[in-house]
Length: 304
Image 1: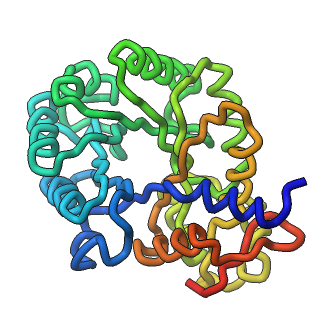
Image 2: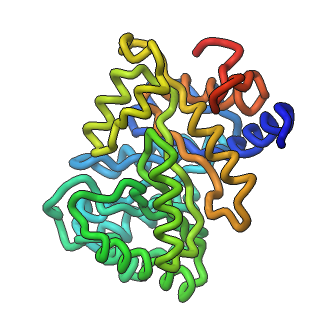
């Protein structure tokens, strides 16, 4: 049996290298990223449908100048084609020293240009040409309503083969989840498919329940009965702040107890704001929390 001190240490170690996700608009809300996070933090930058890449590039530049590790999104169906992809990669490398990117299909059904999928982008050869260190790809523990399992399996195998053939670090970043059970089932499933790519598990940062429900519906994430049950009496107060302590605790336990665990880090979506998410991460990293006595999870010493 693991004592409480060791469990706390497990949680602290597990969360220490967590990454964050921001939008280009977040750059305008603070003077410097060093105000809210320590240098070296991996920060992903969304590429929203219909947005111009310039905002994403400027955000990457600001992050690099403040000592962070920017990881821009590149959305296949939002790009015109190979020429635009090459131009964006060139600017990201030259102006922001970007070494890692996350490639996604994008949140629109009809492509605006030549790319229909992430595989189309990979086949251009530009990621090798610009010497990227690693490439993230999207994962969906609860499945994708628009893509059959056999297509997801084929795409995952393609990406595994690509990583091996190109000798590049490729990893999976998942959509956020409200429960750990679908994550564990999904990890078993993709392992059975032969997946060797490491996995970053997406979690919602601290946010009020109303915001979590809103974003869950927007992104097609299931808000289960189990999630509401864990909120206790807070479920009747939609303004109450929910923290992902239960999931962090359960995932850290899985990480500690699973040989060759595919999970390499947590990835936080800032639905309650960048500052609130960083306050949560710092509190956990510093051990400023107490384990719950009966159920899994923990309580922070200070309110968010």
